[in-house]
Amino acid sequence: MLTGLRRWWALSPGERGLYLRLVVGLSVIHALLATMGYVRTQAMLLRHVGHVPKRSAIDSDLPSAQRLAALAAIAGRRGLMSATCLRQALLVDWLLRRRGLDPVLQLGVRKRGEQFDAHAWVELEGEALGQAAVEHQPFS
Image 1: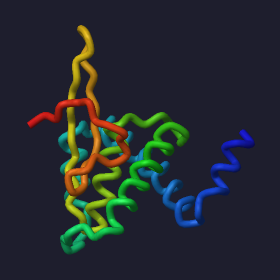
Image 2: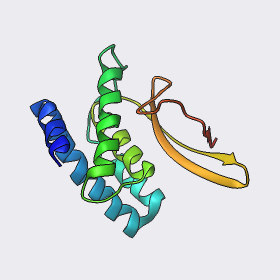
Image 3: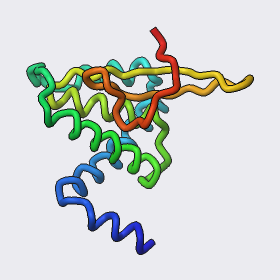
């Protein structure tokens, strides 16, 4: 517990606020997926991006987006509930769109032996966010 508190206080005040918003956002995404399913949830999120003008990513956007994805992964592991990569990716995609960016939500699969494994992630400017290496093949 003490290590967790140290990590919490090591975050900047802005990151602590963002983390709390991510925890709440992941809970909302979870409820939306449970009640509406993936297609309707994604469509609703896209409708509620707001009237933010689209812009090209600048140099500071990629590190900021990487940090957002990293905090979403932490919130997904340590938040109110365990949130899957799909929930995290939907939320990160939505938040980046609210910043005026144009991320790509990827859904992919890989086969290890006889087992299939699905994964969701977000890419910005062709770079996977919050991923050491993506081993999954994205769906077309």
